[in-house]
Length: 185
Ligand code: HEM
Ligand code: HEM
Image (cartoon, rainbow, N blue to C red; front, side, top):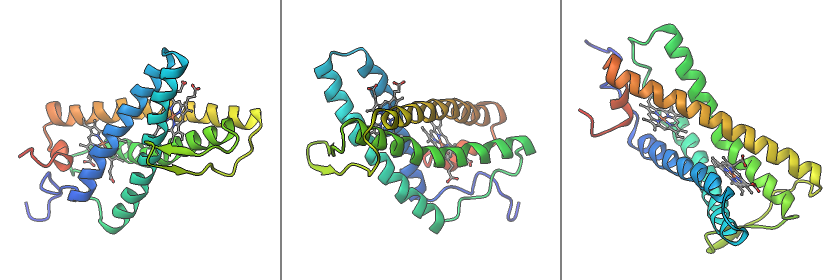
């Protein structure tokens, strides 16, 4: 078993912490956006205030995660993966990294356009300035569309990703889950 790429290869502690923290915040942010749709104007503004601040937080954590990822090599994929599984995993992971940047950036750009250059309040603690984008309606509409499309693609990847994690854990029993869940033996 020398040098075999098995479940004993785990993601670094920082990668694991950032993976689960970002995953939790993304799930909360998607739920928040959908819950907000059915609320009164005043309640919607409160929930979307959290949505925007949480989204900017996800963007910052993702930048930290990418820097961490470049400094700490990810463990090689489990050796027993079929070629299509390894390819799908690579595409899904790369897609997630792109979307973890693109979803908050398009949301931030959309809000910058809609609010005509208004800042994002970070939970009332401090303000993040608007992105330098146009403030006309077509620009706002374009970033809205992109934000929505990217968010829906992210939800699609989430289903593939979680489906794969559960398949590897319960059906294949190949230790993939252990790489990202430190307390699994
Ligand atoms: C929106 C939420 C999530 C996002 C954006 C996300 C993103 C990612 C990314 C980008 C990686 C690759 C890490 C790297 O190589 O640097 C990864 C790995 C992993 N994720 Fe997630 N994840 C999410 C939620 C989940 C959930 C809910 C589970 C479990 C049910 C899970 C289980 C795993 C596992 C087991 C790995 C390791 C895969 C391997 O062996 O290479 N993730 N995730
Ligand atoms: C990873 C982070 C984020 C996720 C997953 C996310 C997800 C979503 C989703 C699913 C929607 C609903 C789209 C629809 O109506 O069909 C939405 C709407 C929205 N998002 Fe985000 N978002 C994120 C970050 C941000 C950020 C950083 C901002 C602004 C600073 C933002 C501003 C908005 C606004 C203003 C809307 C609603 C527009 C409206 O319905 O009037 N989002 N977001």
